[in-house]
Image (tube, rainbow, N blue to C red; front, side, top):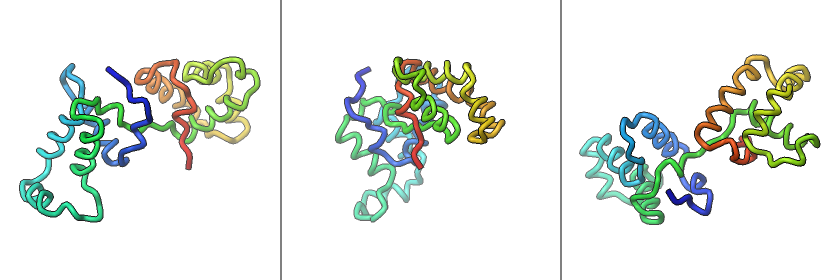
Length: 167
């Protein structure tokens, strides 16, 4: 699989990102989920009357999911891996931990990867933030589970800063 040289996940709406992620989680096949396949699934889910109206009225102010998919397919091709377009962000709690680790001089010599953040949590960063009131106890309890999910999907060497949620 060829990874796109730009962050393509910033090119789609959150709604389409959610649909792609749900479809990829629900697929019972080893075949990769492509943009063309997502378009076919989304089109099949819509009522026939909507599809006819969509074909006649392409001037709507709100771009439909099908229009958005068509634009992506035109730019990247129908065989592009759909999962590459899914937007991912860490929770607010994990984002706080990542920012804390990024500012910690003891981690300055290593790249800030998901594995480094995991190591920092195991070393007590989450407990320290909980003690300072920056994290709630229930948030701290779920950090490793969330982080392990990101590691399973993206690998432990992925840069953690790419997952920070900015609000």
